[in-house]
Image (cartoon, rainbow, N blue to C red):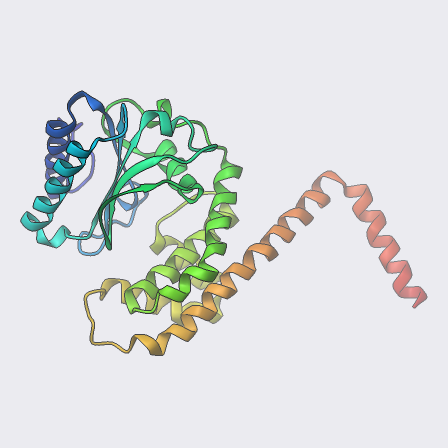
Length: 290
């Protein structure tokens, strides 16, 4: 049984109830907790385009029989609720793995947009998700996520966001269709916002912020929001917009270095004001001598 109205959407709450019930039937006592995160928690959820993001915490890894049953459950769910096919993301992970997300990887089972239900090894790039789930995740079942996910500092979270963003230098080369381009642009907007402000907001909020901070890219960012809404339209020239998308991704990556330098300078000015003042005087004197 779900807690009363975990989201403002009655139909979404019904879907979550069905998913939880299906998991409990298959996993029984092995299911320790189920946690909701993503846009349904952070904000700007759009029933027509947003995903439902969940983490299922388990007492141990799922076995082959459970994997097959969960795979059938997700397949049946997608057939019954066609509009949600490819828009449900669930990560099945053991509590032992959640206790050590900062220091080790682990075997998980996952279904996500564009990928069928499969097993894989978790990676360090997931640290950003674990931070958000721990700090903001809503328990649909089980204890608080803070009790089963090891503490992750804000600095670790920010550095993980930065590291993931830099990976887009390679990832973007496989993102040629319009939907993927929109995802890349908006993901980079959110990464830049997080690195600047130390918190994660929705892609839409980050895009509005980025339009103001980087007006030279406002048209492309606006387009990305439109492409995201029109993701089912295949009657577009995907290749025409890719060069601009590629350029924006590389531009965004370059901003991390600039922001890091700015933050370092702020620390110098705050904690070493006398040294900073002396440095400025020396620079001024040298310029006069020249």
